[in-house]
Length: 146
Picture 1: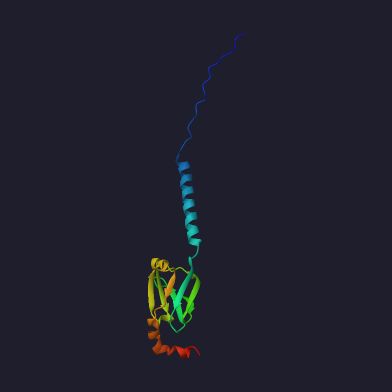
Picture 2: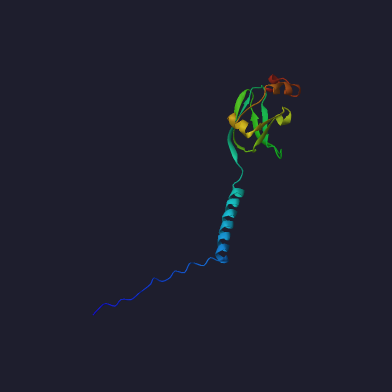
């Protein structure tokens, strides 16, 4: 007896159907990922600068406030004690432009870009001319020290 031989051909593969239904799911997946990334950025909260150093060479304790270019609100961060260096920690990031106000505006303001502050190592020096500006209204510094 001879073995039976049969011609068998491999079954023909039918390519999967790509229709509008599959495109819908692809679009839905992309939209979901985009929404998740957007929600993550919205819920991330504000950014902070770890530390800013304020150098006060004057004989007055000077209040220091920060705001951004829009001047929406002033962030009161505290006082730079007289003739000392004060380190302010976890200061709310003001963006690309920082405006520093001294003594509630009586001492004037300084404007910095973020790049200037980064180059300076996040160090702000109160100008020595501030003493002459404050002396007429604040009086001699030796009277305040008592």
